[in-house]
Length: 401
Image (cartoon, rainbow, N blue to C red; front, side, top):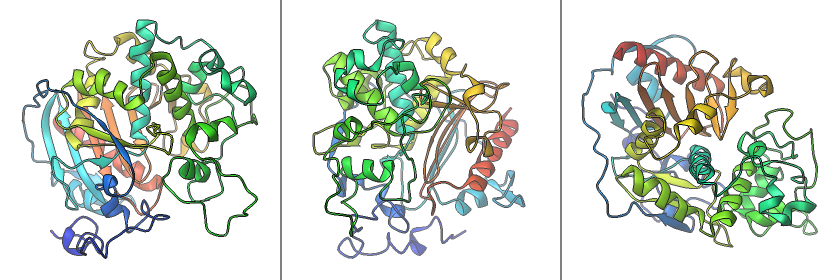
């Protein structure tokens, strides 16, 4: 079946020549450009390699199941098939691992098994996992104050925050995560990261951060006490990454390569976007192939696989649900957030990495299953599409039990 959403034939960006499909700098990550740009970040922004090393690739055996016609709920609650839902929700790649084997793998929109796809905030969970590895070695102390490692932040609202607060996005630092407002904290972060130019018409007297660390140094307001509640702020992941860099003396992309990519046995080298100071944008700048996102999910399902301490995975599944509230309960009514992962509910304690425009890694211990969905949605967030996707994941789990 041909879909306006998933096929090259009807993709107005993918079918144009390179000269005419050039994405405008201010909108490269917005529709319709994201249908193309999420797979070609290296052609748009400066990046640094996350090297896979020379070691063997972790083999993923195949035990493929027929799931195209699986009955799921559509985006408006109507009866639909899995195949139709994937097309309806602008899927670029979809992978199901059951017991460590590939049960279902599909590519859309010109993507294939070697294509590197932008992770958006899936990258945050990689940063949290790195923190777990380094904490176990004593390289970092999650109970230490952030300013013990980054004394420059003593003059910011991060004064008094512990690293665990940052890991759990509970620091209390004021940061406006409004993706659509170019003058919000997130809009300023896009400029600092080199993702976007200064918005046209901006007051010339307004100072814009030249890099991500400069942006962090300007965060001077608290909106609530450290540790009192969860509030999603992408900048927390970048603070975490600077802590990891300072503690190890290594760049973030090098840490990802040495501690995860080379040890897991990833199939392809990844890349990360970098700002003007060479900092790899840890909150969203990672691009990797579909199966390697799956290998990362399998590492988590394997309780760290001897790479990440099992105790860290257990701690990550044990978030404080009392800190979690609106608007996040609209999609996860029993959710929580811990160590840069989302927790689905109290009972299953399933973990998720999630990113805007429809990125998902879902890890289920009960079903021994990992599901990865890479997408290029029309909207940053869409609760109805997220609910439908999570319902489909549960139905896949039931079908494969």
